Image (cartoon, rainbow, N blue to C red):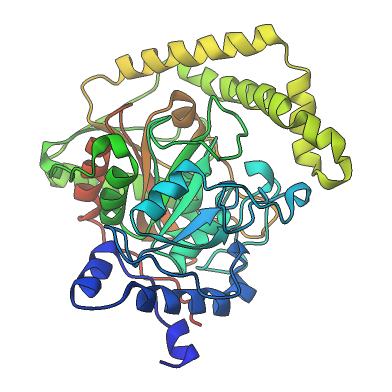
Length: 431
């Protein structure tokens, strides 16, 4: 096969990869063309912080054999540098894989490269572009992971979310982003920003791929398949934006899917969150500032010229936050988790928006996380579902939220719901 033919191959689903291997395909023959595609697209896409000069050796056995994966450059890999999006750590080579990477390799997956992150997962945007329109942001902080999956370079990618860094870029790039319950996927070997908020998450092209990969990675689930779910059996709360800016197209997307749920027989009701809900953003702001200052403050003081203004501002804010204020935020987080869970008792899931609308034009900002932050602060699992294309041809998605510890139930509901969508066409990004 020619290099150009290799570069035109798009990442397959896990089911397609398994069929290929069952019919005699060698895992290396599935990984090599994706590495070639990545190298060809990279001058325009800038999804990778590190892409090896040679094709990684594909692992030969395991349920994810032949599956190419992108790993956010915040997550340690022993065979590739992990710089955390910062010149401070340029060329840093960890001594061992993060636990989540070790699990992937143990399942047979091949790490294709390290994907771009914002600086220490905070707000300084990287060079990654949105595959649907290179003049628009892919979102962040898991910018490269979302873009690499959307561009068909990898089947799966790892990201992290402290506010909205999996759900929002997945929505902007028209892919599925899954943020499990807080703490379900291991964070050993993942650079912390805010240990009270940091989650490890997964990007994929389809909910079905998440349904396969997540139980394998969450080892306590033992790889148990998801139980089937039917839309008509669901009780779904619809949380429309109230008081926060949202584009008309994003609101229409929510209402359109609401009607689809009704037509399919689901029990649907509008929900308005209780007054304490409004405290969640302030709680998150306090937690991330205080913890980032304690975790990164000394490092940023040693290398002040290698730190962005936005990260410096966060550290200064955290240093000015008292211990009393911090523990009040910790208590509020715990109390709000119980309050919101009780308020929504009886529902199977909540459907809401993941962002104010389509990906903003320009690369200076990665977008607004306010529609994701409350659920992250609570530690509830959430998943992005791509739904439509906007009039400008950019993806619009929705966010489906479940209950702590009920990750598989949420994914099953998402699988059922996604079957009623017309999948957006792939971005026209050819090699």
